[in-house]
Image (tube, rainbow, N blue to C red; front, side):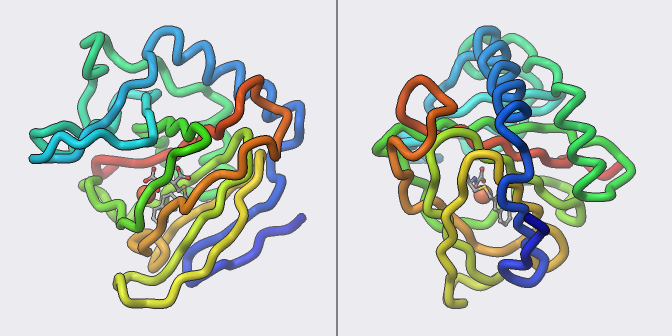
Length: 205
Ligand code: MD3
Ligand code: FE
């Protein structure tokens, strides 16, 4: 299928990755996680755990703990550098975004059957002009996207395995979240759940 514009600056490619590409990407994610295991992010100040577990690829990774949200060069538990960003992901970034410089971070989100992510904006990056590219693997998710203000009405979309979403321009600061996943809707992963990968530029090129 060709791309669809969900909201200004929010482009959706249903089934952008075929099954074979999804399997190859999943195996790269699983190898990365062997080196940089999923960690449980916590809310700043309260320390309340997120239901989504995370890891990262690339020179910088997004973390959150009692001290706040930030990008850092090492895993919060192992203190080791994040695994390299797979070349296939950087290629897809160039192809879909047209941005000439590479991404610096790939956040890996893992949603088990009960996980969700509340409506939020992504603005921890110094460079808010670069787009964000999202790739979904595994069970379908109910994704919600609105406008640049919390009161803007939202749309709900089912993001399935292999789907890509590019957020650029006005879409870059759109409120968005994951209401829930639909366990058992994909056979890609051997357990119920979903990975979402987001490729990001953090610092100006
Ligand atoms: C819209 N992840 O990691 S991906 C996140 O499915 C995040 O795990 C969700 O929100 C997930 O921050 C949604 C789609 C997405 C990613 C980044 C965006 C939508 C976005 C940035 C700006 C606007
Ligand atoms: Fe987000």
